[in-house]
Image (cartoon, one colour):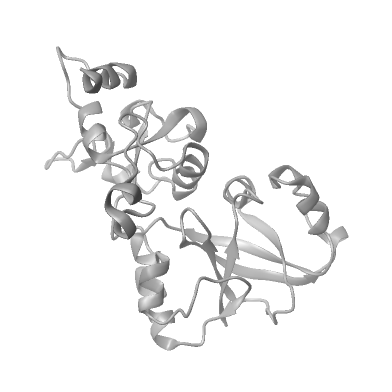
Length: 257
């Protein structure tokens, strides 16, 4: 069976929890989950998209049988409220950041509304759509800094390295957006305010430490390493003036002039 459940990152840091452990013990509620079921996790505002695919490894667990994840709860009161009832162990299989998984596209392909509680996927068209497009192969979320035809490099990293999740981790992107917001850190442009619904949740993410200086094992600090920028400012951050790329402050001063 296939399901969709929702996650609110303002209540629980599921992104970091998955990153650190690869699994989460999730409250079952009244839904009839079974071992082996596939569960897609819908991230609520500001992302409003499916981002995680999991497998149910265990069900009907009580509090004494699960991992204590208090450190990932944003609201301590909600943590204590979460301890009642039965839990299931969700093992992360795949994560993506793909606009095909946005709420609007899902609704156009059979999803009736934004998931609130567990939703069993009964519509074959919806399931086929999700299974087809639940991949990062359809887009690159981070701005490509360099593209060389002989080596095919993205953001300074060879194509053979791009599969490493530090490169364009949807977890890191989500955390950066949730922490910094959706306004460009250079010019303060907000795409929804400028363009309306079509610009909702759109922003580029800029690496303050160049990708070609990051090793495979480097763990991105989304608060200090990543910032949201509009495509224009992002492009200018990677232009060179007198052999050097401008800093954020230098680019801000250029705009003021």
